[in-house]
Amino acid sequence: MQTKPSANLDFLRALAVLLVLAQHLLYRGGVEAKLGFAIPPIGTFGVLLFFVHTCLVLMYSMERSHLEGRPLVGNFYLRRLFRIYPLSIVAVLTAVALHLDSGVHGVPGLSRAAPVPMGRIVSNLLLVQNVARPGSIINVLWSLPFEVQMYIFLPFLFMWVRGKRKAVWPLCGLWIAGVLLALGRTRLVAAIGPNNLAGRMSLIEFVPNFLPGIIAFTLVHVPKIKSYLWPPFILLLAGIYAIAPGDRMGWVLCLLLGLAIPFFGEIRTAWLRTISYRIATYSYGIYLSHQFCIWLVFDELRWLPMWSRIVMLGGLLIWVPILLYHGIEKPMIKVGAELAERWRPRQPAPMRADEVLVPALETVGRIEVRQAPESEISTRRPA
Image (cartoon, rainbow, N blue to C red; front, top):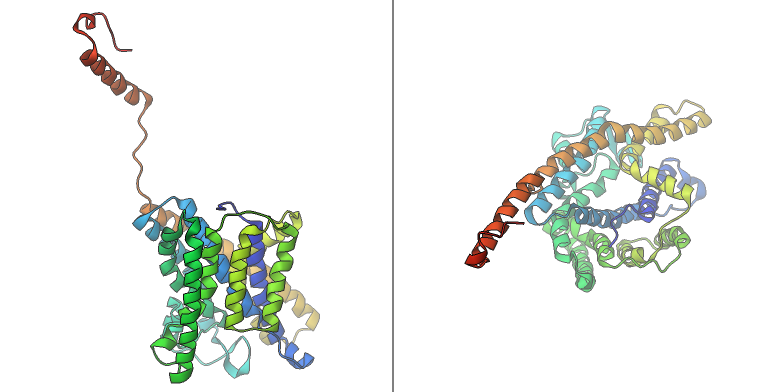
């Protein structure tokens, strides 16, 4: 199983966030009206790529921790808490302070709106808006509750499959069961409406998108496919989803991705590795901040010439995520890691050489005295 940083996974994460960004830029720029046809939901597929990537990377992270049982679970939960919530809380509070909301006035993104009710603010801060169903204040927040709820089960799935190569078959069976359960939930919601228990259990819909990441973890990494084919393969999956979008297509494509990941060689092109790593590093900040950048340029600064707004938007999309990462993400990740270490079992302090040697000599001496014939006791000495 792979435990080192992967350029392929960096590329996967980078492309995922770029697909989300591209969709929202095209929507806000009115490209649909200009072209005369609907833009495919490539951003949605980008989120599905995130789900596969996140599960796989977190499985590798738990494997590197060498923890088991309660220490593993506590360590994992604390790290994820400080990884996800600080930046999402800042994003929600910023939107509330600026009176911004998504989906109002028919605008595909953030725009000025009436003050948000307190209940909706709280649900978005806690990332439970898919259960409370008041909707996301920032439209891209819709995916985070599913990630957080998936985290509840991930450590237990890891402990189940760790070191078991044959676990891929039960996981595939679990994927099939997840698909059937998701289909059943969809039909139930269509029959009796979304405001019921089935409607609030929306995580079920994305179980088949998360499980392929765990399936990829259980497979042995055998790079039989050339590394230069990895980017075209991911783009091919995105193209297929763009042509035939939908839940079922997303489930199948995620499964194909999970099964294929271990068989691709690692990207070797230096410039592609570097760009992928940088975008992947700042991807969470890009994901949460890009709608603010688009709102500022398309709404508040719409009086500026187009060329200057494009330059400004490019600068904001680059520097805002960098500032968020170094100002909030990275420090909070460090805090989470330090607190999580408390869940690691304490190792006894190593004994000094003299503390190890003297008891050993005494033990050897006692054993020799007990085992030696009486005639040799006076002449033999401990070694």
